[in-house]
Length: 276
Ligand SMILES: [Cu+2]
Image (cartoon, rainbow, N blue to C red):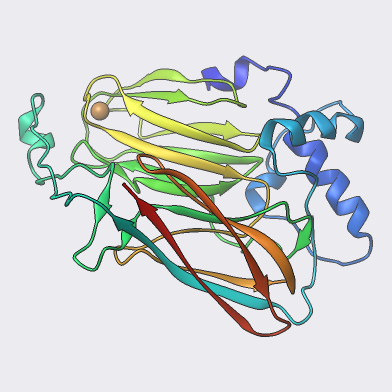
């Protein structure tokens, strides 16, 4: 919990944004994602919200409610460039545990059909829409010296459970921009560590014991995010009709954006290509 003990100015801003959003929505009756409800209540006021918006570039608070005539965006993230064969990871430590499963580098995974796995697709600057799905809090597992999943999206205000399934020492080291950093040992007897993320962010996670371990946590201000699968495919459901910027971010390939229009109750298709 070292991260929680080091509050910064941005650390407490996510909650007021959510509160302001709920107040703006009024009597919609929809509830926010449960993990956000567990976040500590800061003493600040909604006046702090603009700073959080500036930090995320998302352009405003998000109000969750019922979506009328929602549509869907479906598509694929593609890679065109030199072939990228899977690179095996050489285990150099704790071989009995870390070598139990063969791993390949996940920093760029391109399928035979050109699809890019682990790209994060999102709608930019959306201020109103569906609530986060009701589900268990997010978790990041360490299994056979590998972070699972490699990339995930969590709601701003959520607390991430970092699980040690290995029974050996790991070390969680995060590299956030808008949240307090964490760098803490997770001994074999410490099954779960909790990391709160208040502000929207893109956070790299490493283990300082096993240099090949790598994960990414995307902390999102709204639920219109998806992580592409092994075919590069993604779907965003329940999108209010309108024209948006569709954004794809990938840890190695960078960011691509393109406009997209979602018809009322209909579907929009998008292909985003990273070219090298
Ligand atoms: Cu480790």
